[in-house]
Length: 465
Image 1 (cartoon, one colour):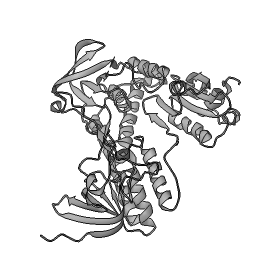
Image 2 (cartoon, rainbow, N blue to C red):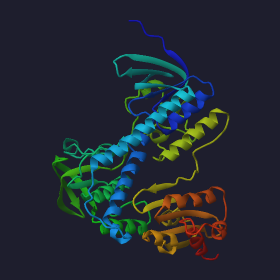
Image 3 (cartoon, rainbow, N blue to C red):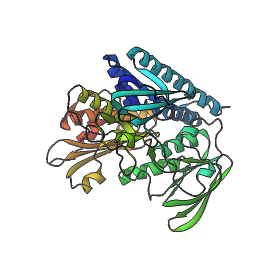
Image 4 (cartoon, rainbow, N blue to C red):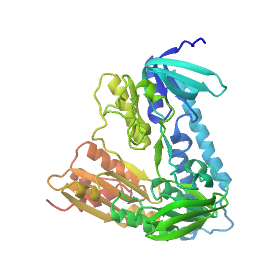
């Protein structure tokens, strides 16, 4: 049997997620012969099945909530209804536009895109099984792994057999579920819980921990809990599911131990949102000398180098925090280092936002982390109604709080639960990155009436040293 000769490239990228595609476009535009191997989603999960599509559907749900509450804004509400097929089609139209944009960037940069399954067959050598049954053998001195992650389906008896939805399938619904059970009270579960409730579903969240978003401060969990209760969402915390019966889309039962007692939670549909699993299996990593961590992420050092020479891993598959903006920073680290720099992932700020309505946003330390680490701090906290912009919107729920170092004026962390929290957080993060004292935000002239103006009020509430 004749072994085909490998096609030579300067760089091979496996997976077209945020970090991988950005590296490919950057290097190809500089004249390096670069190829990207993508199994299914051109551009990765973010523009196809995750970040952007989910926020598209969440915005449609917000519009639905405006219709329901229109009378408080002086509008009559007669004869409106939710058309889930229309919601889905709006999302699909956006995705189509994003995919077309990605194809345009491949063409403009000169990077080649191959659709197929790629796996190592030797160091620096990738075999690609194409959709038409053919194969291509690729070789390069440098390889970037950017294969992302997928929704975790826990090995609970009956769960797989129930054919539950993940974040992928729920975005394709053309009907409003009668009673949606959501397994998991983390970010994905909470965003879809509120959206589907606003479309008209009865929604029950089943969470094994004793409070939602348990890594956040108790006041954050309590505020989110009350928001969901006020919107008619049932919350079952301290519930560990040990068996699932039925079929999602028809009738499903979760057999659980809830706060020490056996219970059965029934619904018509099931959405699983219990975490993420890195896409690192079936890549032939062992044939290239690439090691994995005990939780199946690719083992990398702070420069994102793997255990194999001239192989890097970026984004979710490398264990980086599972956010597109972090994957984008992974791209910058790798490209800067390839150009002779010495950037690392150590110590970088990781901002994140939960896109409920209102939003939850945080960067830096919260009180729980500061106390656990023995970091002394000063706390400033104000209700969102102190930010006058919220009164013009009739959206005064929530609060802002900031931690300032007890021995200096350095900002340690910021949390906001309120309208446009993510946008407001960015202003604080820039101040933190620049090492500015909190007084800069306290004394800045910020436009009235905006949400950012609330930073004047917040940082004026910092106790003196």
